[in-house]
Length: 417
Image (cartoon, rainbow, N blue to C red; front, top):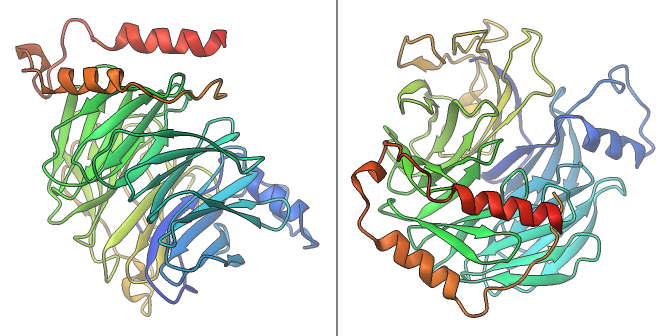
């Protein structure tokens, strides 16, 4: 659990920290597009880290060295979100200035501004093939854009309050959006229709994320909980309780067995997705809220950890990079060095995570059609409000997943298009 590196350079709080793709493409594209001389490690896959800050800028960092490679400027207000496309060719930032910006990585992060929202743009998501972009806004709408042309293609409507997060499933079949209306909506990326409304949170839903296989998704809420859902049936499989303040972010690890959360209680936590038990708590790593959490297998420390490097961004303007060592059967965080950073303050230093439990178990977008008549959304609302059967109660599995055939049909439709 030792902090690998603390990068400092932003002059206000960090709102996001995200790794580029696991194959090092973004790093290679950036080097190819500049006159920088290759160093001794240039032949190795290396990840970039992109951070977003209230200082109206985003910064690009080398995750291996902690060196700032580029400062992205142009937004007129706080930058609240940042992400890379899966192919590493593009980055996106969103801002309280009601715009999003696309950045061309190979051409020295050349920007393109996307306008169309009427309020803060709080989130964005690239399609798996990197050709489309979704932006989510406090105006309650989700817009779809062509990445290459920067042209608006369509709109998803149905939320009754600000949309805080939007994300594609890994296969590009589904879209999930989290909103201040307390629900997560699941959309068909083929038709643009809402096919499910996930209810259960008691306050604003801040974020949602799919598992690697697209079968599950996790949500984070101001009600101090995160929830794990079956993407096909909409059933809540597990509720993660223990944070003492709003949960700001949640992600499912590649294995689908681990959930990572960040919270305004100044901690990040690691949970068992199977049992809902909190395994580790990262305490005292930050002097402020933890705003974002991300995981990468690129740029791992020399201990050869299986999970890779965990990045957490804090309200105290720092980014902590952590070694996540699980071994073959245990989830143990080991610091890469024993020395604490005496001047690290909120940067994490050599703080050990608190071990809570000793248990050793540790595509292309073919079409984008709007839901013009609202029938699908209305049907989803009615289904969501229906009284659940005994087998549909939280944590129990029904004999037949009601959404399984529907999701399979969507995937067949995508493959045929």
